[in-house]
Length: 299
Image (cartoon, rainbow, N blue to C red):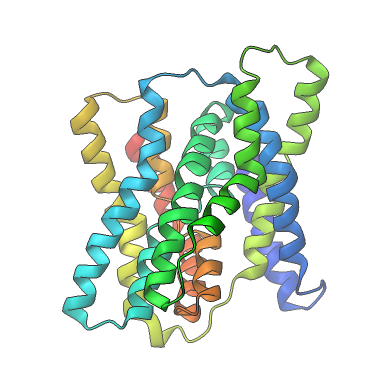
C-alpha cells in the first residue's frame, strides 16, 4: 500500500509543481541525469549480482527486440492502410515499439512483484529496451526523418551509457561477495529511483491538442498496453510451456507505456513531437489501470 501511495503522490506532485510554476522547467533533466548516472547503476550493480546465467535469461532479453520488430510490422502495414506520413509512421514504431521499462517499469515491478523481480527488469531494460533504442531505434528515427545513420555514434552511445557499464561491472563481480556496507549503500542509492522517476514523469506530462491526435493515440496505446503484451504472452508460453517470476515480469514489462527516451529521440529527429509526448503522458495514466489488469492475469 505504501508503494502505491509513493507512486501516486510523486506523480501528482510532479504535475502540480509544474502547473503552479514552483520549480524550474529544467528540473526533469537534472532528475533524469541523477537517475541515469546514480540510481540505475546502483540497482544494476546490486541486483544483477544475483542473476544466475542460464537459458532462462534469454526470454527477458529477447522481449524488447521481438516487440520492436512486431511494432515495425504492424505500423508499417497500418500506414499503408491509413495513409500515414513518414513522420507519423516513424513516431508510432519508435515510441510504441519501446516501453518505459526503467523509469516506470522498475518501480512498478517492485510494487507488484517485490525486489525479487528487479534483476529481470534490469535485464529487460538494459540488454533489451536500451540496446534496441540505441540501435534499431536510432536507425528507425534516421530512416523516417531522412537523417544520416551513423553506426559509430550508436556504438559510442552504448559504450558510455552508465547503466550499461554498470551491468558489465555487475557481471564481472559475480564471483565476488559484496560486503554488507556496500549492499546498504547500493540499496540507499537505488531507492531514489522510484520517487525521482515518478516525479520527473509527472512534471513532464503535457496534454495538448488531444482531439487532433485521438485516433492515433487510441491505435498506438491499444497496441502498446494490450495487443503487444498479449501477443508476447502467447508466443513465449507456446515456446516454454512454463510460468514463473521471469516469465511474469517479462510480460509485465512488455505492458509498460511508451518509453520517455524514445519520445525524446523522436523529437530530436523531427518526427511527430506532439504525438510522441501525448503517447507517453496519456500512456502513463492509462497504464496504472492496464498494469493492474495484467498483474491479475499473471498472478
